[in-house]
Image (cartoon, rainbow, N blue to C red; front, side, top):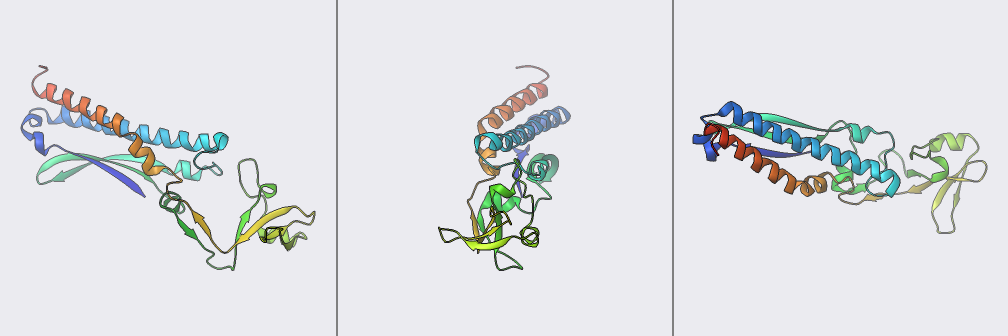
Length: 204
């Protein structure tokens, strides 16, 4: 899953032809700053979710570690350009956290959703449903009609669901990118102004 931003030099080719190296360096620096800003804001969003309840709750940290960005060069119609790609790689559940959707069981009849008594402070499941049952756990229906798995002490460990709906935009991937648009615009404008200045030999 990724978002890409490109800069083409075609519309200012004459000016940039006088200082292509300087231009590329300035634009590359600007895009790297874009990527760092996005990645930093995404990480902060996830951190704040632990204390404020916003965004996603950090559990293993795998999703946070999957975030990254890359600046690459490209060619279009004989004119140089560069692009920035921000992404989440290696975490299979990232797309549904951003795009939303419905999760259903693949090989079982029910989804087992862990409940607070069976979770660490970070939100990691302590025991699997099978482990709870093997240790004397049992099934029972709650007053609200939900099917639950209890441990031997009678504490609810899991609620069983046929499906779970994930709301769109929970990850905040695109939302964070869009929110940074004003700072990206100012950064690119400054880089372009300085590149043109370089091409003119340092004249304003």
